[in-house]
Length: 135
Image (tube, rainbow, N blue to C red; front, side):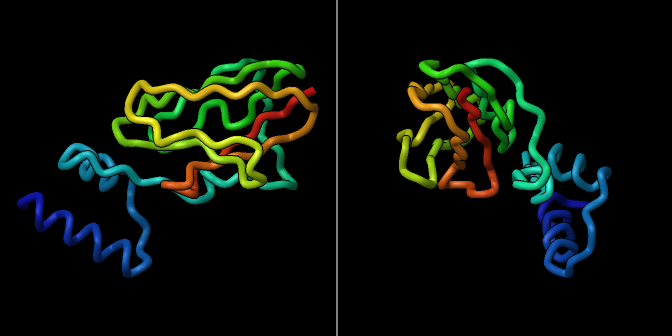
């Protein structure tokens, strides 16, 4: 099967609300670098907090922020590094911070001087979300 025909079948499956199997996902990835992101994997739910990981570095890769939740003390500077092959940014919905568009290997840093939970997302890919918990 040609790649174009495969992509059309994949699109028909997605548009028809049929699930994409892991084998189809891998085949699509190998065929043209397509990336599928399940909404359930990307959205942080208020009633189910993600496990907090201490650290001041967040990696942006494969359409996700890792760790999804970073826990840091007051006064810490957190640095996001885009390791993905497409541009992303880091935006606080409350407008506490906003990065420029980050190309591959570009970084953005922000210092958190006040305790609280700071949610953020990529405005280019809004399903990409994360948070910094400052204590």
